[in-house]
Length: 83
Image 1 (cartoon, rainbow, N blue to C red):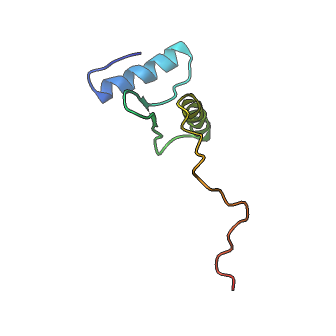
Image 2: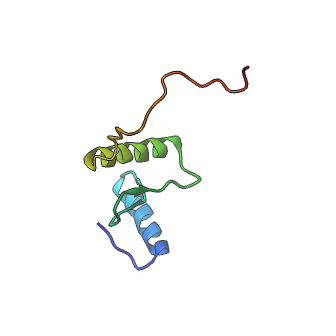
Image 3: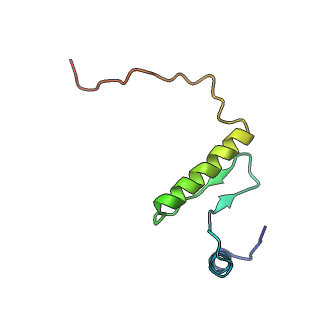
């Protein structure tokens, strides 16, 4: 885990580490709150969206937030505008 004084230096260091280390940068992910938060930038690629979605699924499974027994899902699609 890396901690930086401000957002600008964190962005520079993360992008630098990803380039130099040959890794892939995924995130940011906010931690330390009651539920995980996954942030996507407007310029996110499809690959980034899939990666963050996969992390969100794992977080939901680990925190047991995906088990919504009170939510009712309709199997039949609702047709709008038909009489």
